[in-house]
Length: 162
Image (cartoon, rainbow, N blue to C red; front, side, top):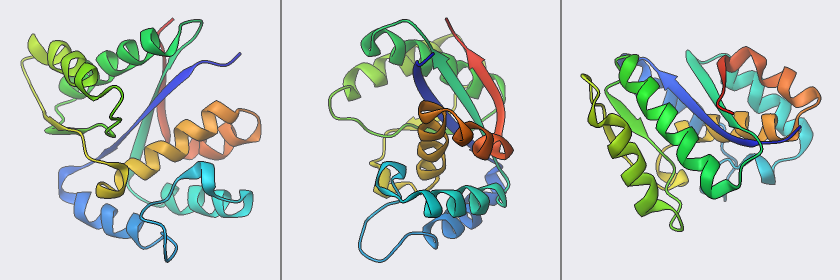
């Protein structure tokens, strides 16, 4: 059964720059970013292996049986609350012009009652390389089959919201 997937990568604060550099080094000449939709299967497998070597963990948030406009806020709210509860100091959500204002509101509301309120921003995917890891895992979960297993070494938790 399909669903709406949001994947969130977490990296220890002291490892962020090293992880960004490592992920950036995997980009091919030309494109501004790694986008799993645009990659060949053999390259996807190589990237997942390389991403697994980083000290990065990914949580996957899943909402099933809802329209995207209902599922996305549910996933983002849960992600923001979990980030705050884990003590994260920064949260980056890939900017989507069509949902930016709503995403910002959802995250702000989700963090409102949190004791720890991480800073949050909305970079474009080419501006934050660690978003590429999240994109890869979300793509794998959306495709299902062998891809979920190939992404498994990166995944710390799958949070079923519906």
